[in-house]
Each structure stands twice: as C-alpha cells, then as structure tokens.
Length: 73
Image (cartoon, rainbow, N blue to C red; front, side, top):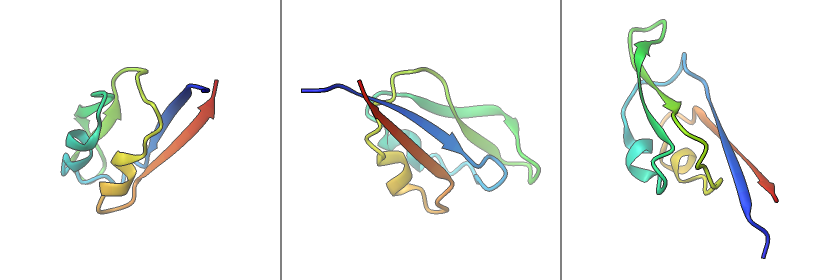
C-alpha cells in the first residue's frame, strides 16, 4: 500500500481563526499563528510536515479557506 504525503494551503486573509480545523487534525500539523491577517484575526498555519492529506481540516472549515494536496509516495 502506498503512503500518502499531504500539504495544506491556507488563504490567510480569509481565515477567521475559529480553530475548528486544529481539533480536526489527527497529526497536530496545524496551529494558530501568533501573527494576524489584514482583518486582525490570528490565522491557522502549518507547523510541521506530518500532514497525511486526510482533508479533515478542509471539511470542517466553515469558510472554505483550506486547500489540501495529496501525493502518493
């Protein structure tokens, strides 16, 4: 069975920092940034490379700001 490597891209200007995606991530790949976007919200950012491309974060995101990429290795 092939392993899957994932990556996440976030539209930081549209992220409201609701933190729903952080709880949905099984590998603790994402966390809230200490920085803020143009609207003054802390946004989600990738903090390590353990993403498996499960897309849980993108599914639960109420604003649809997360894009998940998957590559079979």
